[in-house]
Image (cartoon, rainbow, N blue to C red; front, side, top):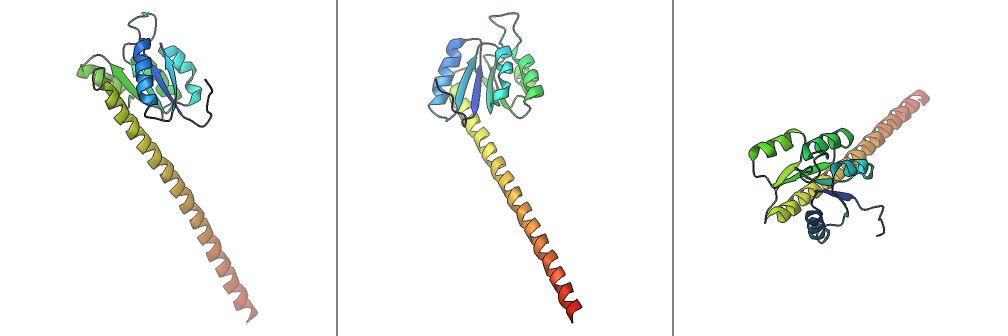
Length: 170
């Protein structure tokens, strides 16, 4: 598989490979991202240098491997290295405490595994894309406004200089 340098990444981190593949298939039909799947958080953390835009993180990453970090521990580590990455916590648990715990440590959103999970994930990623587009436009506007301000200052400065020169001539 060829890696496209311009495409941003979405990381899918779940200790159930079938879950990762199903979600990857679903999302890759809808979004123009590169996808990387991981069966544990430690591997995903090692690849954070790839600057993933979105990380889908299973809450119970240590269900099959008791020595692995759980989702909240991985979330904390991600926040330290990539605070801007949007982490979507994915869990089979429909407990408010789990959702609150995830959000407390910086999850962007919380999705319960089930029949609507994939479409909910699609909606969240669309929202992330909108946020990123607005931020990019805002950055462009700031640059343009700054350039116009500098140009205005230069024009005013040159005008004042010219007026002073004309006054000294007469």
